[in-house]
Amino acid sequence: MKQLSSILILCLVLLVSCGTKHNQEGLDAYFEGGLSNYNRQLTNVIVADIFTPPVASRIYAYSNVAAYEGIRFADASKESLVSKLNDLDKLSEPEAGKKYYYPLVSAVAFMNVGKALVFDLDKVEAIKSSMLTEVKDIGIDEAVYQNSVSFGEKLATEILSWAAKDGYLRRTALPRYSVSDDAGRWRPTPPDYMEAIEPHWNTIRPFVLESAGQFDPGLPTAFNIEKDSKFYEEAVEVYETVNKLDDKQLEVAKFWDCNPNISHTKGHVMYFQQQISPGGHWMHIAAQVLEEEKADGVTAAETMSLLGVTIADAFISCWDQKYKSSLTRPETYINNYIDQDWEPILQTPAFPEHTSGHSVASSAAATALTELFGENYAFVDATEVPYGLPPRSFQSFWQAAEEAAISRLYGGIHYRPAIELGVAQGKAVGGFVIKRLKSD
Image 1 (cartoon, one colour):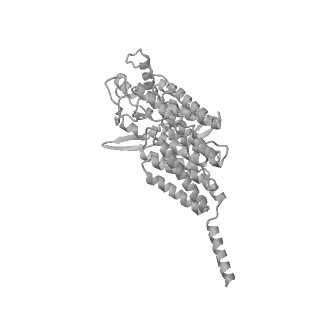
Image 2: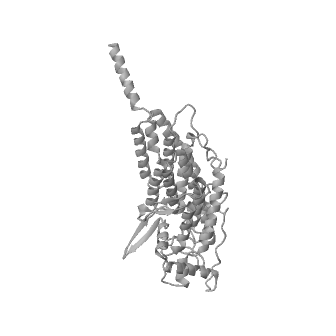
Image 3: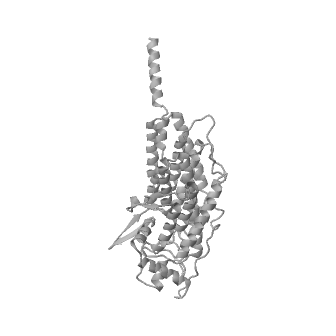
């Protein structure tokens, strides 16, 4: 009888053991390309929530910093971003004697931070719950599971505490943009005449930059309505470019539109079309490249965090100049002084003209990605396929960035100086961030 009892106990132990077996290969396969996928899912929420480009960049940055800090312990050569990012002084580390599965730590940290920064919390929570269920189904040691989830949640809490002090909430109490009679000053544009978006974004704490105005690109050409003036000449260039646009230029303009919320009016009915933001477009380019390279989880997190921070600082820098110069858009100027019936190809965004956000963000992103993947990294950009546009091929990140920049002239929403100075501004921001974060 005792022998039978021993056999039954042994069988139960074996069954329990099999049920909690740590399936390393299965888990590794499951998390391969995980961060790219999670960023895409986060993008879906960002697009549906209609976040503005600057706000979207902030969400990507904090979420991916959390992901990196959660997985970096899997590679002893990787350093924390603590002390490299402004005011990030301390983060928790793994407890001695406990075992963790760091891809799971990273995923939990990413999703908890992302969930706290969007409106549709339930959507992100559903993504996280599905991930945790699948991880358990694959097979993971219970203690490792609990340690990893707890550590990821702790890191997320600390990242969110850091984020809460960046001025994001405080900016909402600041005065709205004031429209004046100054003809050279920005004013709301057709068709919706929306009020200015994020006029105080330069009060947000930068991630790496020393200040929002550190890489100020300089003022635009002085406003002038005289036909022999430089400013009039720049406006005419926009006017004539749009009027003579060829099919290839039209494709470029539409591909890089990236306006998160375009309005359409049919009769008395208005509806809105949501799209990916400029920063989100570049995050997707990186996600695609990482998948094609079959990058390991640590490399992927390092890349996405570095790129996210770079783009976020690019928007802070760009928005600082936008509301310093507060320059009127081509649509307003051309309608008032050249052709009252003229319309741009793209819908004019609701913020001042100088400098071009696409130019700054794209050149900053290209600077970062070129540093990580090389000067002549050819790729096919399929980011816009879900939004009904075909993929485009590029021979380098810089070729893509330059096309994104000039697309704003083709679209009729920027003068040339905003594009050219914006590219230089973004390159300076990107170079500074890379140097600071990649230095040993």
